[in-house]
Length: 425
Image (cartoon, rainbow, N blue to C red; front, side, top):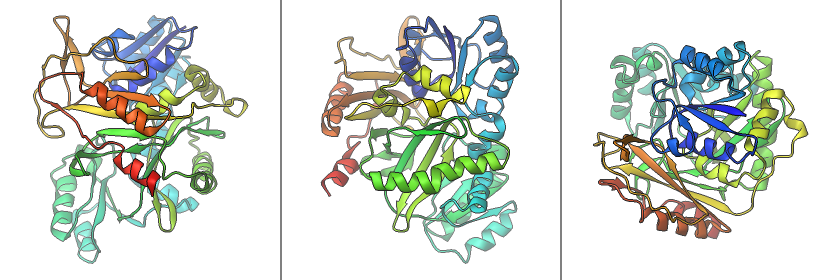
């Protein structure tokens, strides 16, 4: 089989490595891919992830048997729709279903209409009305740009001054472009956060192992928000009891709501949850695999990934028993100094070839220059280890990070600490 994966980051590398475990897979093309992915797939750097027409032309010319559209932008732009029109089987939601992430307003209104637990909120199109509302609000509060913003469109002002600056930045200065034409202002929820990715064919659902992300740049959850500095799985806060509540009150009702709205969701649906004193609530939906959650969840998948994705595409997920390995996984992100602000690129990367079998290095932001791997992004590598326990996985992941070198290498040293504390408590 010849496969095509749209995207070029750590998430896509994790997907590609897992797809290659299927003996039927002969070739995987990555559009655009990156320098490190080139060791596992045929990269096509001249075709970007948002160039839908070129992606479809490539898929037809190379007689692709199955495609996976991984990032949010091409999903929202209708890449899956176009591939399906060309007769190419594909994993991922169509553009109408991708609105569950592409529009925060759509997602919040959906939850309100169908009684899915989430934070109280208001929607604003006019900056003046938003500012007037904030003058009577309690803080901290959450301000979200409506559209896609590379995972950075959520701000949490601690006071009125910060809230006014947030509204100005999003709605007037257009920090996130047209994604900020509308905003959602919602109450600030408290409690442990849990990420749950789920395979779904629109009706049946197979949740993946839960995970815990670490968004802040610095140790102790300090510094600015990032795309994610590391993650662990499973999340100890996500107990079997909580999982049952989520299935009954969030997961199945969300799928039913999407069907009722005429946009059934097929693909990977990401539930960003908070376990509040009032029970689990939805913070956000994503219409695709999370990054870096994918890098700890997929290594624990026992069932063949391509088989699962084909069941999703064919609407036969209910006939498949999706199985998982016991144990745990931990991913530590190696970033460029300065991320998520400005950082330098082009630093030579050295990765030892004798890393243990339970360790994988997922390439997120690098490229090949004169035959050498060099840094080309803020989050450069994700170093993931699996183990029988979370302690073992973390120990091996951190040991491997010490052996990977590039100038300006930056990482958090407390990934998994909150999870370990929760397990003790």
